[in-house]
Image 1 (tube, rainbow, N blue to C red):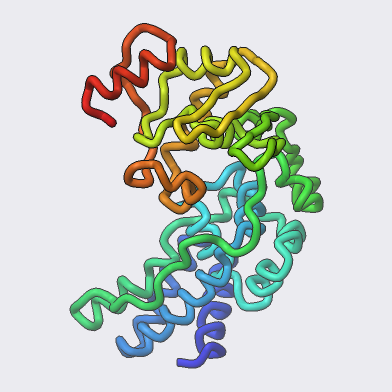
Image 2 (cartoon, rainbow, N blue to C red):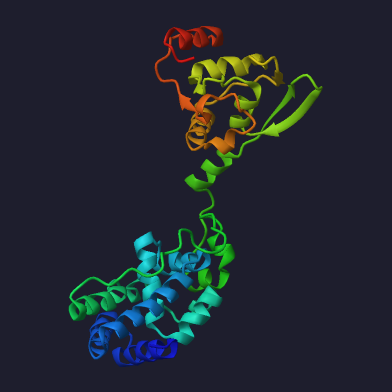
Length: 301
C-alpha cells in the first residue's frame, strides 16, 4: 500500500463519518476488513509514521490549549484524531499548530480508539498480533514549553480558546529555586576564582560534600553556610557571604543530586563510585567535624 492509498482510505472514512469519531472507527474497520492482512499492516505502518511525525512539543502545547490539559495518553488520542481528519489538515497542523484555530476543535472532538483499529483487524485476519514496527520516539521534537509560556508560543490558539498562561505556577517557582545562583570564591592553590552558581555547585566545589559522596543533613549544611567559609579535605578554600540556608533550597539541591550521573561529577573524581546519597542516620549535632567523624564510626568512609 502506498502513502497515497493510505490517505485515500483515511479521507474517505473521514468524509463519510461527518467527523463523528465513533462512526469513523466503525467505518475504518469496514474499509480495512476489505484488505489483506499484509495491506492492513502496511496501512498501520503509514499511520505510525504520521503518529511519530506529530510527536512534537508545539503540537502538544496546542492539544493542551484545545483540550484544557493533555496527558501522554491524551496526546496519543489527539494525534490519532488529527491523522483521521486527512492529509491536508494533518500536514498543515504539523507544520503550524496555530492552523488548528481555524478548525474550532474541542476536547470532545478527540477520541480514543482510532489508533487501535488496524491492529485489531490485522489480528482477526492473521490470527496473531501485529508485528512491531519502528519504535516510538523517546522525546517529542522541538523545545518543551514552560507551562507559563504556552500562550506566548501559540497566541492565536490561546485567543481562540480563551487560554491564558498562569502568572505564578508551582513549576515556575520550583525552576526558579533550582536555578537560584549563589556567589562564592574558590582557591585551589592557583589563585582565587569567583563563581556564581547553584547551591549544588557550591556544595560540591567547596568540598562540603566529602569524597564519600554522602550529602550532609540540613542542619550541618546550614551551619557551615552561616560561617561563610570552608576548607575541603584537598586543601581547597572556599568563601562566600554568610547566609541562612532555607530548607526549600536544601531539598531542591538534594533532589538535584539524586538525579546526578557519574558524568555530572567529572570535576569531583574523588567521589567514591561517582554517586551521591543523602545521609539519613546522623547525630543530632550540626557540627560538620562531628558529622564527618560519625561517617567514619559507621564505616561509611
